[in-house]
Length: 215
Image (tube, rainbow, N blue to C red; front, side, top):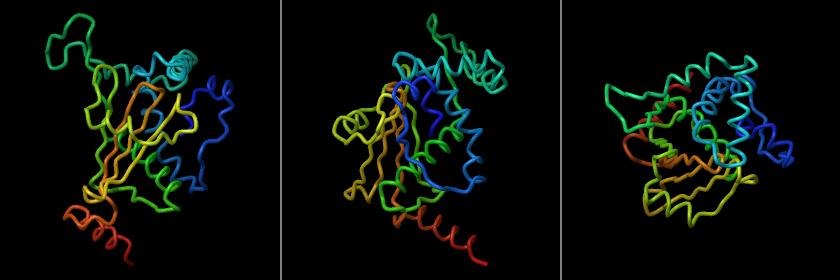
């Protein structure tokens, strides 16, 4: 996703080796508003790294120049100093997210990378066993995720801005485990059942998909 790379970073490091595919324009642009939201809602947690600081500056510069003003204001409203009346410690706030929009973009990224690394295998756009969790700020990653990122192979070409790791675990019914690292500050974990999974949820999803495709 090109938006992850701030123009300043693209110029400085000649970011020219991004993975790209030929896709339907309508399919790709259908995600644009969610991608705009994805970058802006996560941006407050990106500060502290070179790529993250550049992205933070890019979003603020856009806002000051009149770009994406309604969206940025909407994201600012996701900060709550007293969520549900709860009094937080001094200087602490709660940041909320639109989980479905985050999930949709993260799953799109995983689908594209999976297609690239697995000989064109297409994952369904809607797959009920996808789980997406975001770890940023003062939300530490769980121990299983920390162990995974320490042993799995890094795949990102420009890891300071975007890195990713993945494995499939046959011993856990071919569970797919992905970790996306944004701006060296935010980890997104994506777990999903294999498309050949025979659990009740996956079997039902495949049957529904076939029925919808039938004339």
